[in-house]
Length: 277
Image (cartoon, helix red, strand yellow):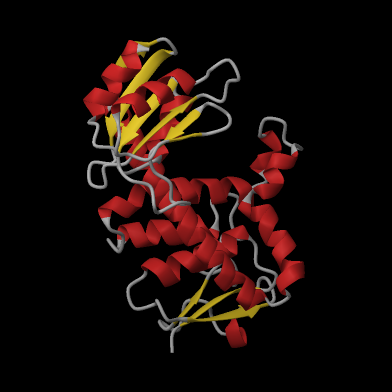
């Protein structure tokens, strides 16, 4: 039985380091998790002696960092080892790099330098959620396994974000009454948020496989997509279209309603209709 050992009352670094081992180190997917007092090792044995036991963030071994003043952490040490051993798929490296750098930042209390560092928004960050879960779950190993699932989700979010960043320059840019406008065929809806954060006022996205479309603008009360909604509805007699109450979202698809009918309108047609308003 392979065993991943970390310290009691695990934090973001120890949990993420353990997650990297169990999710990405070949042969360790079903490893057992055991926790020891911080700084110690399992059964007081040398930390790197047994090849079936990996210590992270404790024991002063190869995946601990408490014996150095370098700007590193257990998560970063595990990641660099996985990278060196070619255990990581190429497509996984960039999202993991971003996650690792964030964990390292938090482990050195660099969130104190965040803008408005005491703002309530940061209480939704994972390192703070872990603190709350320690009280509500009450079992450290169970806590780690639950956070593993959250890390899986964060990993997917970063994959989506990096894909969207790569697609940002593929957006067709045009001008409409709402200013800088863009359109793209993509199944990655993260491109919508990224485009609007990057200066577009309105973005049209159409799924190349499912055919569904979504049109969103910056959250601005001065923007009203009602004229566009009415124009599209007058042309498209088959697709299901929903104008959000904010008037900033015009939806032809929603994971919240699988009964939406995809529009037969092409992306170029949607662009021309938007330009005509």
